[in-house]
Length: 85
Image (cartoon, rainbow, N blue to C red):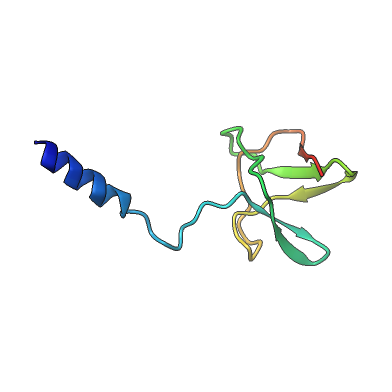
C-alpha cells in the first residue's frame, strides 16, 4: 500500500503540462507587455482584475493572463489593486 501511494504521488507530480506556468499577470505599459512581479488578483471573483501603481494612481491597467494580452485575468474587485513601486 505505501508503495502504491508513493507511485501515485510521483505520477501526479508530473501530471501538469509544462507550458501551463502560473503567471502573476501581464499589463500593457508603453505598448509593451510587462509581467507583474506579484499576483494582486486574489478575490476569487469573476470581476476583471485591474491595477494601479503607487507612483501613478491615475492610470488603471487591466491585467491579462498571457503575454499576448488577449485573455483578461479574473479575481478583481470594484476598486483596482494598488501595487507599490
